Amino acid sequence: MHGDMGYFALRGVDQKIATLQKKYDQLHTERLQIENRVKLLRPGSLDLDMLDERARVVLGFVSPDERVVLKK
Image (cartoon, rainbow, N blue to C red; front, side, top):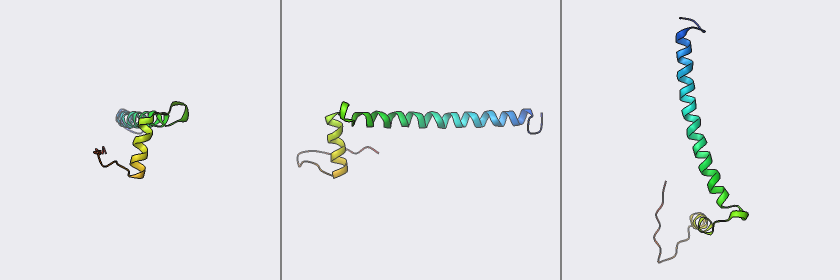
């Protein structure tokens, strides 16, 4: 029941595993989203809309007749 290999220690390890698994799942999802955005910018599968969006964000260029909506 007690000690480094006891029941309560096992419960603590289980909780830590659950917390770390949740963090891993969040990071994995974020990484997949970033990979998908990068894939759209590769020469073989270049998405012109994505290129236009990134160029406008990086260069800060907007036509006078356009409205900009930024997501954070």
